[in-house]
Length: 135
Image (cartoon, rainbow, N blue to C red):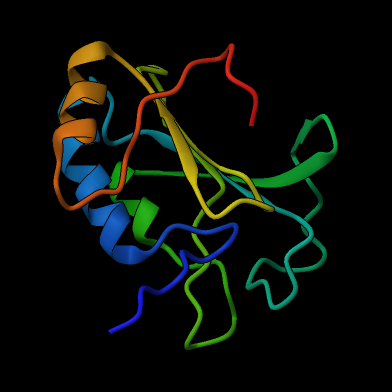
């Protein structure tokens, strides 16, 4: 069976579940998390009247809050397409998940033991990087 290319700008539900296993124990605030969704997605379930609440260079995002398990939420109004939040982090800012709109990969930053567990998990196609490496 040929390999499927990872979706661009979203995390699959299967990857989210694995990340939740590693990230939940790495925060003291799993009941209070933030989720940012890029405003430019077509087919977004976010109401058009809701303006962006988070502005970063070259991107604007709708911002939501909820328990860490809300990472499972799809922000797509297309039933067969899962659109994850592009950025998510707990209130204590212990770690952050970033899925850039134009990339088929995500970045996870956090404490060393948490990142080591993510890198070692055979269910993930993960590799180490650092802020000095170019895209």
